[in-house]
Length: 335
Image 1 (spheres, rainbow, N blue to C red):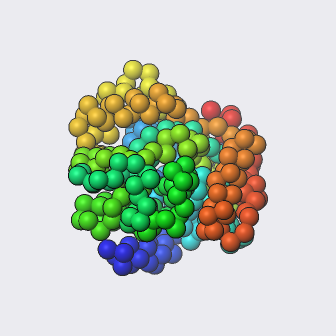
Image 2 (cartoon, rainbow, N blue to C red):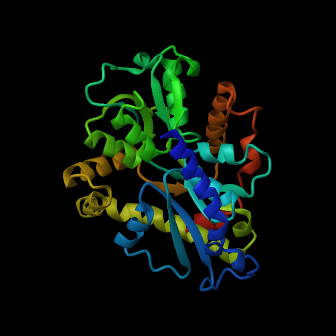
């Protein structure tokens, strides 16, 4: 199981250089933001292509530029793809950019924040488990998705329960591999997010801990340096991020049930559950973008400091070094 995870990661790394043709290097020399017809944006999505589905549902997908969506199991893989030159825009939690920038030579900058729900960010155990809370994980094999929200909220939940990271047998796993290990008895618990948690519950898993009140709800848009050097690509990136915000607002305006049908089909869950999850998430924190702020930078700094404390980062990282306000004007205008 763990060997397969390593092989999968290696395969992604091998494929990334070949995906660069999907990116926007050809447009990097463009000097005009008025003509976007030649712009191609390679954009990442996690779990399922929900942002693309939102745009299509809201009739906002007819962009004056071309978008090539790529699906990943986590924001960490999206940041790996940006580092490899295979993506122009990556969407992730606060955590993946921290690790992608940890070597001090990032080729990207965080340019916008998308506020979103922190539901379905959980530690789950299989049906019939005797573990009823985080304290019960001591000495247990616990899977988690490395360098993601799952890594962070699992660490914070352990601290709240009076446990150290070393008190568990932590196993880094991709979401799909973690589900298989949980169901196959390879691990005793799994910390994950999104569709993997939804699927886990469908298979009888029980929640023993949640990151709902630990996570900030800040989801970051990271842009490759070449995007920020091109007026046309900057304009396209700002327009796309703003369209996603407008798409969610369109759905919230009395169309939750209809969009839940799209979600249910994509995530293979009952329609009633898909609608409840969507409504609950939008009630907790409506999905909407905002420009960079000192508070959002400070929020990520808190996360980075936690990973330094854990020993995963070798030294303190100043996250401000890879944040940029270069998209603020275009984004605020587009919103």
